[in-house]
Image (spheres, rainbow, N blue to C red):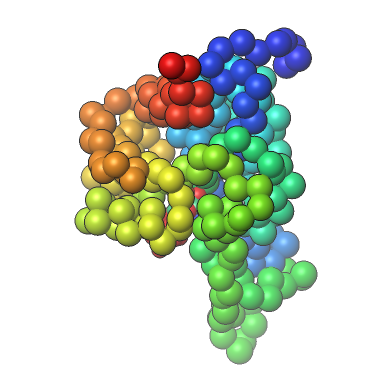
Length: 227
Ligand code: CTP
Ligand code: CA
């Protein structure tokens, strides 16, 4: 079913999409996670596929099902995701929609931590690889278009504009995920697309429509009309 020949403006283009949360183990039965459902990344992968792209969908443990017709690479930790992204390169574009854990537990226990009279465990952390920054700044096999997401709770444009420069990516899809917006885990999104040209404020709309519009913009950028 997935071998149908793709047609559409993105036919022949290979695009990596990361999505979902990552889980960082504390011990064999416990982990640290975040509230990402994977909905927006999944919608982006589906929309890119519908426009004909060959999509490598690298997903943490999301609550939504992956789209049909894409190559699904399930991962658990940020380190797994990092390795999967590097293995999936080269690609024409990469969209980093995953909510990657910034930190992992420095020495996850290989045995279940037990309650003891000595008190509670103390967790030490170490930083995870920044997958987006690495891919955006690599000179070999850098995709033509690198798109990051920025989930912020305040000063969205300011943070996201700085993030685009810091990461070295081409676009940042920024959104306000403060609890009052209902965006994290919800069906809608209100995004600001930040590019080298400036900012585009998109109205609040279903995540599928955000994905559709983003996929169309990616198609227009990767395959500009011949003059
Ligand atoms: N990202 C990534 N690898 C990481 C962290 C983030 O690939 N280890 C990507 C995300 O998928 C997203 C973008 O980077 O596309 C921005 O993530 P975000 O968490 O907003 O950025 P950070 O640099 O981690 O900044 P913050 O301190 O705001 O979390
Ligand atoms: Ca982060």
